[in-house]
Structure formats: C-alpha cells, structure tokens
Image (tube, rainbow, N blue to C red; front, side, top):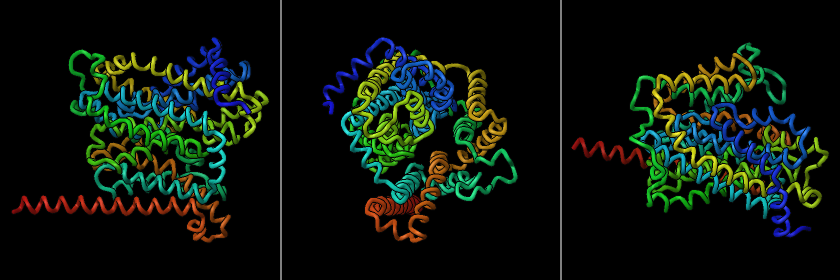
Length: 507
C-alpha cells in the first residue's frame, strides 16, 4: 500500500504535467463561467463536453470534468451576491446575506468572503479525501434508508432556522416546497400525481425554473422601480474595499471550520451533496450566533460558512464515487461514466490499482483551487462594476440569461412559463415576508425524504419504531427534536420580548 507521502509526490508529478495543467485550467474556467450564468450549472457544461472524454486520456478528462464541477459552485456565488440570483442551487443560501451586504455598498467584501470561504472549504475537503477516503467511504455504507430519512428530516427542520422572522412562515415554505416536489410520476407505482393532466408535468417540476423564478425573476420584479433595492457603488472601487474589517476577520475561523466539517461529511454521503451542506451550515451559524438577528442583513458568517460547506462537499463527493462506485448526483454519475468508458472499475481497490489516476486527480484539486483564486480575485472589481450599469440596460440582460439557463435544461418552452409563474409567486412571498430559501430546500429534499421513508417502511414491514431502534437514525431524530424545541423556545422568547416592549411603550 502506497504511503501518503508517496501518493502526494506521485499526484503532484501527474497533476503538474503541462497537459493536465491545461485541462485543469480549462475546466475551472468553464466551471466559473457556467456558475456565473444563472441556471446553466455544471451538469449542463459537463454533459456538453462529455463526448470529448472519448478522445482524451482518462486523467486529463477527469481533471477537466472535476474542474467544471467545483468551479461552477465557486463562480455561482457571484450572481448570488450581486444580483440575488443563485448561479447553482448550492449558492442559493449565499443570497440571504451576500446580497444584503452588496446592497449596503460592500459587494467587494461579500465576494472576497465567498472566494475565501470557497477556497478554505475546498482545501479542507481535499485534505480529508487524501487522509480519510477509505474510512469515510466505509462509514457512508452504514447509512441506509432509515438514516437518510432521519438526516433529511433534520435538514428540513433546520430550514425553519434559516428563515428570518417567523418560524411558522419558514415551516410553511418548507411544506410548500415539499408539495411542489410531489408533482409528477410516483417512483413506486408509476402513477401521475398533481400534474393536472399536463404531460409537461409528468416528470415533475424541474429545479431550475423554480430556483430561477423565486430568486431571479422575483428579484427583477421587486427591484423594478425601486432604486433603494439595488446594490450601490460609491466612487471608484479599490482593492481595499474587498477586505473585511479587522473585527470581522477574527470571527471567520470557526464558521469556516464548522461549514467545512458539515460539507465534508454530507458530501461524502451519496445523495446529500453541496446544496444540503450549505443550508445546514447556515442553519448552524444562525443557531450558535450570539446575535442571530444579524443574519439576513449582511452577516459575514452567513456568506463564508455556506460557501465553505458547499465547496468542501464538492470535493468529498468524489469519495463515494471513486471508492464505492456510488455516484451521489447526476454530475458524479457522469464522472463515473468517464471512468467506465476508460475501462476503470471504481471501488475500494481503485486507490491501489490506479494510484496515478487517484492521486493525480486529488492533487489537481489543489491546483484547480489555486487557479480559481487567481482567476476570481482580480475579477472582483470587474464583477462589481456590473452594478454600475444602468438598470434599464442590466435588467434585460439578466432576463435573457434567466431564460437561456431555464430553457437549456430540457429545451422545453413550458419551463419558461413555470419560471415566470414562480417569479410572480416569489415576488408575492417577498412582499409578504415569506422566505424563499426554505421552500427551495423543501423542494429538493422532499422527494428524497418520501423515497427513503417508503423504502424504510417496506424494509420494516410498516413498523415506524424501527427508526428509534437503530442507533444512528435515533440519534439524528433526537437532534431534530432538540432543534425543534430550541426553535420553539427562541420563538416564545422573541414573542415575550415584543410583548414586554409593547407594554413598556403603552405605559
């Protein structure tokens, strides 16, 4: 068995070859661009470039595809912060504090925090891949339908923590997201549910038109005619405007570590992924903060923790794909397909059978992360200057990219109508104070929760007590109950403070 030091040396030798450096740079560049363009995403770019893998050697092909994967999440924070439009679903939670910070006149700081958090989280994820891949993969195998259901339930309850203000509104948005996720064909029976006789909804509602609608279109509708709702740039932009205040810097270490730990763990679980990791990291930061009311108004922790989480999850998502042959997402399935096309069987023996491929790919992650920083730091001033474009010129361009990104997923005009419909809904939600992020998380996790619950009930022959008899699922459900109690207590305390304030004013 090759030692860690020997693996690093072999990986650097492979990754630093000129051909692999070129494909690594091309991958992260394409990933950044697709992340910046709302709705395009890594899966579209990788699908388009996948035929190239037939004509490339396996290692440079995988390095390029991997660069697109983590580069898209890296770039997706840009539009989340500047325009309140998530480049990828994993960046949606970055909108909650990134865009308010940009509206305060600090878009450069928000972008710097996103880049710093992304790089730090990615590095921590890479270290875990290098040192713990076999152990994490073996632990991931212990998760069955029972544990996945409990974990997803915890994620959905955490979504109510993400919502600022009323926890009831957050819970309502989670339930609405779950309801939208039930539209389409039933996985087990094959029957259609809630499609209202429309064949276009037979396969369900796509994530992209929903996300682009409740965030992108809603932002356009809300911002139109409101100059105060747009980010402001005062004078010339300098590099000094990129840096957070000294007291903010001192508070970033723990959020990065917590976000990276959450992202690394969830990324290694098949089916979890960076979007869930980002939401969970944000929920944890809100819960541990001394002043949680800062969140949603431009809190640095609300940017750096989810960005660290989703990029750490991007890296550790390769663990089950490479060491178990279990892809946790459609993008990872394409990575797996690239291996199979080359005649390489993923599994626990991949590290020993193909050390050059494994270590070369892992060390290319370091190089790709450095490329991303070099690419994005100088471009911060360029991205910020986009905000100085007069809104009558900027809005049509944004609308065009929203339509292109939505249409490109399925080439279906019906998705455009869905996007406009969800945009109107998102506008009404924003006016009435209903948060959009919990709805998106409910939409993503709801179908997974249903699938794992029904599978667990089949295994347990309808006995729900099995969830409490299994140690891991019982522990996770216990944490969920504790989070519910803490949320209820904090809500009651907030209501009590408001009542006391009203009584004091009345006196």
